[in-house]
Length: 205
Image 1 (cartoon, rainbow, N blue to C red):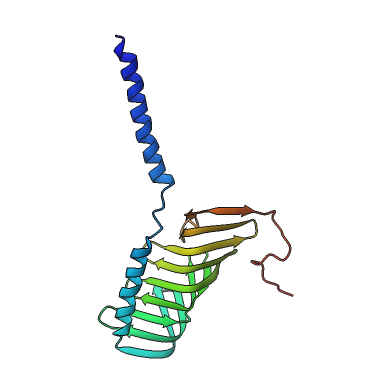
Image 2: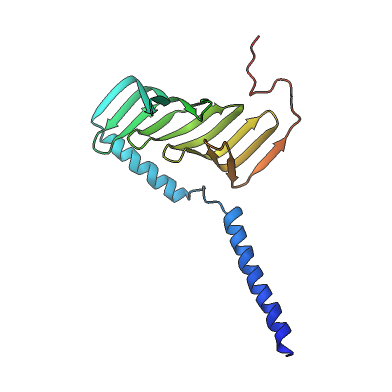
């Protein structure tokens, strides 16, 4: 009988420890942050594929649609196309995309990018900047995965909107629910609404 309280408290400790690990994994891990080695390997592989490109062009426009509506349009100064893998490398891309029933517009530009139009995937990198509704975005790397309607930003990510500025290593944006998940060194600065000279509000005068 005397051993039962000790056994009871031991079980509570083990169960509590297990729940604590599960909660930490579910809510506080960094699943959207890639290791530097993985990121470098992927970039090198893509670069080799583009060096083997079959077709080159200037001032190109790519359009992607779904169910009779345009989902995105990309303009670029130059492009290289590897037909064997269906990969298009672009320089100075400008992406305009539309999502949701209200056709919310997203605009992003960068120095470089790659397009897998067959699978509806885009990668933009180096000097990524853009806007999504009332949010302004800055990062070094952006991945758009059309199949799940999500955008992943990586590398010095900054998101600004009238009431808040968020900085993080990586950010996931669900284009359907409009929810954001930040990871890695997250810092948030809250500001009163209606600030004058807000960088997200265009001057219409």
